[in-house]
Length: 305
Image (cartoon, rainbow, N blue to C red):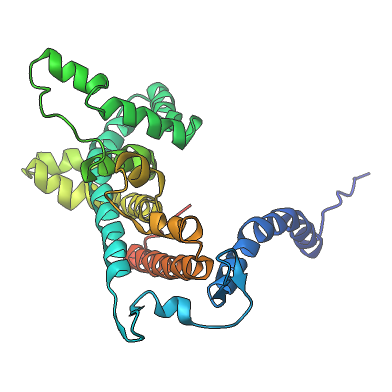
């Protein structure tokens, strides 16, 4: 006598998975979708005469303000201030991406070549900063690079600390951005490097190839998906960073996120702040699309999450 094993039908399994996906979808809709819709709606409204909130009058004036300035005499002219701020954001995000990439490739390759028992602790050490608030980490970096802080004290001991003052400079902003987003570059590159067969590099050496040739012709193409993912994971959040230019740059390195915050705060121009936010979202979406397009060449899959 044989027992019949009941198996669930594909249709029933699909219905179950659909029901299980409803809570996370609802959560994302409330926490991401609703605020995003509000920002888009606010960007097409007018500034309230009292300076608080918005007036429910449809207009595209907030978007015009990004490029056009209205003078006191009623004339208008081209205004490139906010384009310069966006350019600064791209500039600092690009430098941060390059810096983290140069540091992360050898670090990730080194971790991937360690014995298996040491890889997990090393990855844990890389992710350890995530356990601390980014605000606390930025404060710690601020105290570290201050002329009267730890780094300045050590340099003074060796007699080279005079003139050391990088706090509230663009270099401090870049240093803070690099420190904050370095794990975002190391982890995806390590994920690709761990799957790389290092015997291919040894074969290249045996065939007479030089180190740089093996690096650029064998190793880097193999870990290319991790590199592209890391570039996206660093560049995109660095583009919209707020704390580092504010706390470390001292307001001397304006980035788009600081300008948006000022519009919602000091200027109380919510529609214009929302328009700048939408503008940043569109630019970020274009960067993501280009990254996926570049990463999808040669049939390679690039994951940004």
